[in-house]
Length: 238
Length: 252
Image 1 (cartoon, rainbow over the protein chains, first blue to last red):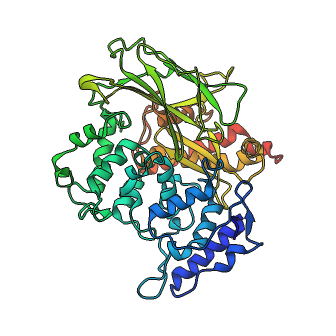
Image 2 (cartoon, rainbow over the protein chains, first blue to last red):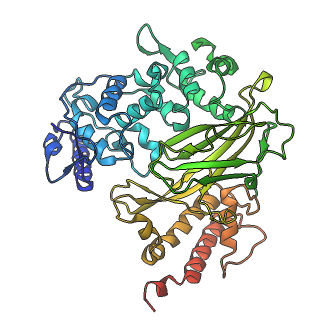
Image 3 (cartoon, rainbow over the protein chains, first blue to last red):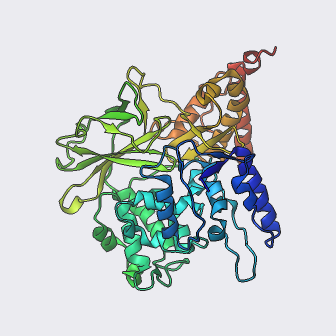
């Protein structure tokens, strides 16, 4: 089917449906909404035919979305709540798959419908988040492997800690350092211990970089220099 | 209680009057700008130190090379805000960064929260409440607090949202609430009560609040929360009164 987006009423209808799913996880997602003429509209600048498929990782999703939304994407795509909410429903089996218990456990609403007024929570959206990371590092997406490798439906603690600081995740030096520290190329996943609150974790990296930001221009430092300046607690990941 | 900040580093603060960021006219899409950065007060900066100008608004951030201390300027004389659909409420930061040796990558001087001005605009009058449009779902407006100030967001589905934001009806309905929200953030959440720091957006708001006719001039803002809540109400009420919102909306 062709790409669409929700009207404001469509967004609210989808939100109401998700709230009902949260109350009753055995409830099926409202797939009928995807093509509803009452709640959707054509995108004015994007005429793209989408194919139903399963996207398993954030990287896979980001690459597919980059193809769908074009390069460069139309202005305002990232802030288009109706578009991202519609894409969530279109890819609902990837974004909110049935778990081992046979249900779809709905979590925070910002994962499925971007909070348009609060851009700091925009990165929590399970499709807009990885897409934005990919766009910021499209010259070398491997640099952002630590942010793009996790599962699409469960990004995990490392992503949660780093994407909360949007000024960090658009910084190529910082993202290169995070990937160097926490990404294990042999498994394609985050290293053990990268999440959580212990020394050297991604949470600690974000705090340390907040301090460094006062003294250093984090965009201008070579990644190797930044790595060398990190405290000893990061040695186990270096 | 006055909050004091200590600069532990030797980073220099660039005066705001030494930086201007101007929209290149006629305004195009995407918009372009040129800049002037005067570092003559900071003679000790290394001549090879690099100057960067960063433009940001919400999730969008662009960084531009503005040459070096000895040779500042954009290649081609201007820079294009290619990642921004428009120039509304875009803010800028200037960073001077060590270019070589022991200071390579070190932040040597900076200035944040610089607004974009148009040719002919009075740069001495700085907007306390820049306005931009956002997808706000079913909300008409919302305030966005960030490090360098507060922005009024208007729902981008409202046709002529700029006209809407400046209409008498909107101002009358929203602005007293805006005043309350902003002052709550400053006085209650941040516990900020210094009206004299011309570099800080909170001080500018407090200074503005104290200038509203009918607002009592105090040596210090009340120390306790109850006193601050009362103060916020006093200021919001005085603001509505001096703006004559009821009359503005045709009510006696």
